[in-house]
Image 1: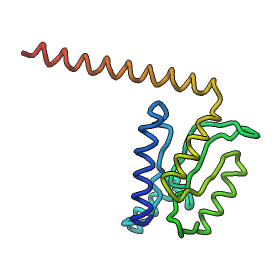
Image 2: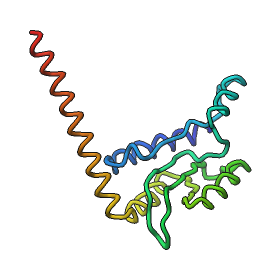
Image 3: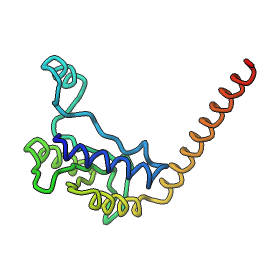
Image 4: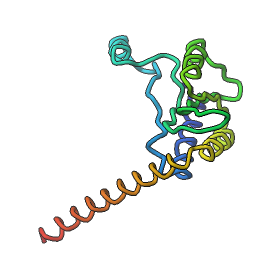
Length: 155
């Protein structure tokens, strides 16, 4: 991924976390770039299951449009960037398996598509995620209180 795409990816991740806090852990970036990897680390990653062509973001959240999509893949490109053949091949398989795949070229485009996607998440999923998020926040608060109590008791 080039520097311009990396900057866009960072902006999109920050934006998503700010606008959809409850769902933040469901948007992930699979570390799949070759970059500074050595042949050995590349072979290890491949043996561990790395697949060429996976999009920059995976959103593990279903949405219902004309049909149910199991999740969303977002490939980020510069305004003139093109998908590699491996990305096109992955897109074909991903869509055949029931997922939506988008190529996005700007933060505004990312926000537009993601906000539309969120409107189509089934209500029962929204409720389940909100409940799980509240549970995680409550558990985190309890851990923080316990930590504070330990600090107070040491004094």
